[in-house]
Image (cartoon, rainbow, N blue to C red; front, side, top):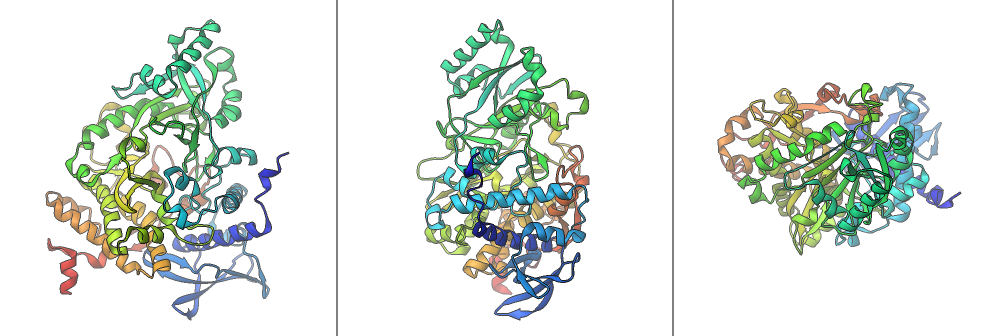
Length: 608
């Protein structure tokens, strides 16, 4: 028995974690119109709202909020009260879910599993509240990994965003990023009849193994194979997360192990830190070495986090296409926009499970890839931080973003303009010039700062989360999977939902609450960035008209509704667009700043 596994579960931390989380539940469910709070009045610039539980009208919730652009509910911290038959009770997330079950429309058979994810999310929140108490005035100057492990919010939209179903309490303390524990990879040898290594041309197998393991360890592993009477030339080395080996591979792959199709070699020499994405590992022994991303059969936010050996076969080809197509683009270079490419992969096929289809979780249990390190594309004096840090709020309810801006010496408007130039402008260029979209949420983007001022962004998770929309674009055969045939109004959601709704509204909310920087001004600056891009790229005018980001309204894509429908598999992998939950319309916050003339938006506003 290890008492440390529950040392952070205390009454005070339970109440604090629930207080933070219940605000998020109400805010995001109201944002998606899953619940509809009733306005009771106004006080000191805040609306006073009431919610009546449909399962029991004697249960009501009361809180203060402002409704910002994009129907974002900014709830006043500490204002949520729960009243049951006239008496106050502690608001708890799991009880809220049950009390509003009718609104959630979650299938009865899936409700216990969803509650498990909610409870696991709260378990993690309590751990962070106890152990990761780094105030923002110290975090603002911290190194990349310290900031990475201090994050609290995860994906900001999802209510059940940190379930990690599959980890037990001891696993959490060893492998969760916020636990700050070094991890050593386990290495296997897979027979080439099952295993494929693929890479960009400049990374032959021997080169990457000598780089990542060192020649001494490579020779040691080869000797182990020889001592078993096996030929090292017939095997490929595979890095494996230790949890995956202990909980999945050693059991489910026992037939392959017994016949030496798969051979356990031992631990590698380097230590790694897990990243927010959990299955991606950063080499802390030698940061110049590659990230290693491994299959991890943990259920988190609607997916088992495995990796497909079939996708691994195509990844280097996609990397090569991306680098050759947009990597040398002079406009991207002028912005400093950088991509961390997946340069090599290894995938193992378990023939026992292949008949169940390539999308089966059992066929995604043993693969890995190597991604370039951000250390290779930055220089001295530059600070790296996950872009998720811009919406980080510490254990004392202090936001990091205002502290970053304060240290920069810039006004909020000037800082934001530089940030939008670094982040939004490259996304616009990919979208309009190349008919290409990334999945640019906070965890997928690394922000590079100099003296706390944004100078560029680094995009990661490229090959698994990129889409090309132009059927006339010549893709190599192995890159065909990134082509997506969708109508224009869905294509535009890559900016309007993924960027505006998925990240910007949270940044705007923090600045309004903490700095009294009105979200109308925030969206004016977003519009200014888009107009500036359009004026710099007039050759794309026909696309700006066809894919008009200044539309009056657009479909709202609801991610919590998607997770509530099936928290174990949110998307149909073969047709993800069919899975979208498009409910209601967003009023576009930049619509009012549209203008047909090719002039600066600043000049337009000056003449209004």
